[in-house]
Length: 277
Ligand code: PAF
Image 1 (cartoon, rainbow, N blue to C red):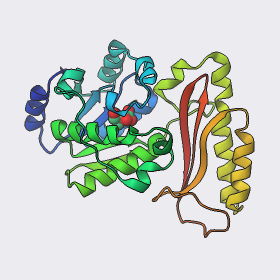
Image 2 (image 1 turned 90 degrees about the vertical axis):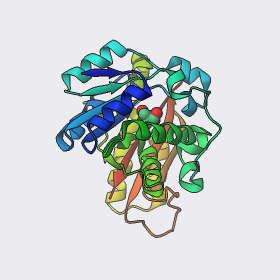
Image 3 (image 1 turned 180 degrees about the horizontal axis):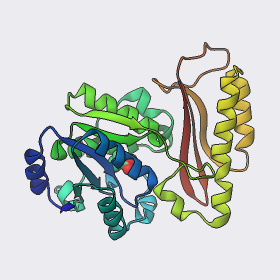
């Protein structure tokens, strides 16, 4: 497995493997969810590149950035075992040689809903770095977990609208055996917080079941709110899966919905969702 630290090395690697690259962008501290993306990339493309870069431009809270877990040796071992061909692991000064640029891409509605409302500037920072990573890695396909459903939607639109020549592939969310959505942030939970966090997936599964049975948006929303009562909830919403607009009581049922939650446990911000199509 090749470890690539600079943009110029990355350009040479991508030129050598043009047309064959499957790409998994990450911020490191990998878990089984990331490895499932690598496996999908492996199955569909002959060369797999993973990037590890904790992107300061997407953290609206500097304390959250400071606390983001990092363990490169552990990540490299996991990626080597998963059969990755190259890891692009640039320093901050390599990605942003002149500091984070002021350039911002925005998609007003989809970007400002859900996580966009609570984390101003977050998705602008994500799109900036993913756009640049696509330019350096030059993949045919890039793989994203659907836990970050809104992120996936925005990246897919950016890739289409800017004709980046990359297909963004959304891959199933991976859960722990007890239902907790896998996240690099879970390591920051205390033992009690880890148990409390299960309320999120339990509430989502119950809400999804009610929606499938044809319950009204108001009834599903009430159940969701009540099951999440013990937690500090940022949002818990039933949304149209394409526009992310909230499904209002009495409005027609959209064909595809996403029920999405963001909540704080032990001061750690966790997100989860179920997609009903
Ligand atoms: O999902 C993530 O880990 C990050 O938002 C991404 C896509 C690697 C961009 O920094």
